[in-house]
Image (cartoon, rainbow, N blue to C red; front, side, top):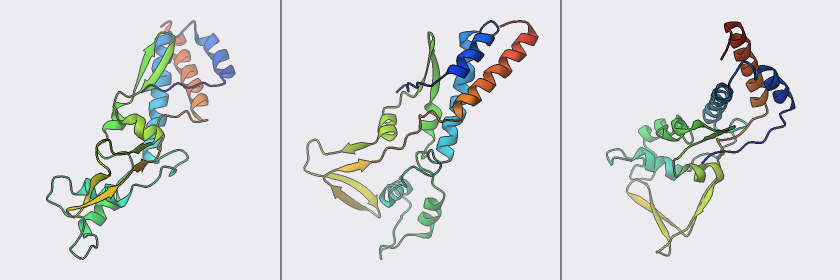
Length: 190
């Protein structure tokens, strides 16, 4: 799912005009890709942009994660949470269950364009949100922990955008490109 970003790049065009003699397009793409990956990783760490803007995980999602494997229980017989589950839930970050989504994001040169995205099929659902409805049954059935199940006619997964261009990204890119051009200029070439 590549992301396409349009930026008012007047300052960047001026800078790139000066450094174009020193840096190749591939070098500029590597620099911009590195800046964007740093920014995207920051979005994951801060759970959204602005920080904390991603909607919290539902308790049933956390319980299902905790009980994967079947040996641990999130709930006691009286319905209260176990101490182990409470410890687990307290430190759980959104969209970082395994870290696979975050580490799958890659920049890719495509001629004069730079694409940044992931090939994971569920990435679009997290980026844009989705509504899940049953295809063959009347209701959805999913585990909520403690051997219990919940039923719903639809489930709404909120958008938690992680591929975004922040206002501070452009100046950071320009600075990184200028620094690389200055270093390459001193070194005498590409």
